[in-house]
Length: 165
Image (cartoon, rainbow, N blue to C red; front, side, top):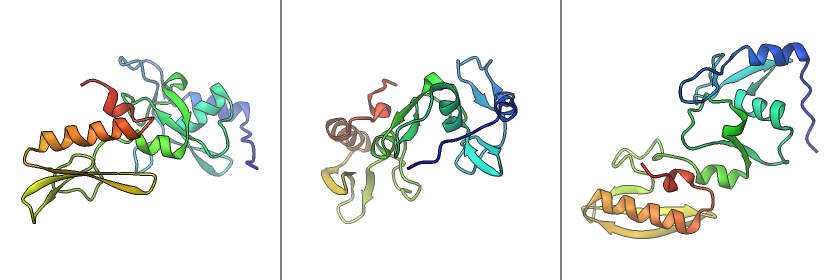
């Protein structure tokens, strides 16, 4: 069972004093410390808490055990506006990830890598610990379109692929 978060009124005031609610884009941007992943962090009772998770808890209450908090796809990581956040499973949060993995130096497209042997772009995705090979493509854009189509078929929470550019 998860230990409930207890935060004093003084700490809550200190937290909100580090939020810029006047961003022209409608975001509430965290102005305090930022971790190496770009998310806001707040020190309370000797513990560092992620600012967006604390904002959710302070405004909307506890989120279900085992769940993560996910930003809207158009939000910067420093956004702590409660109605820009949602409770989701770890799987759903991972599905909503944008961009390629850091070790993908060939295409910078999530799910697409250069296949040296065949001299083409290889498209594949992973879902429920299973790899889905989509195919080889001469054109990078065709390979990207194929992985997006497959993710939209298999993933339930990948807003990034469903938001028009």
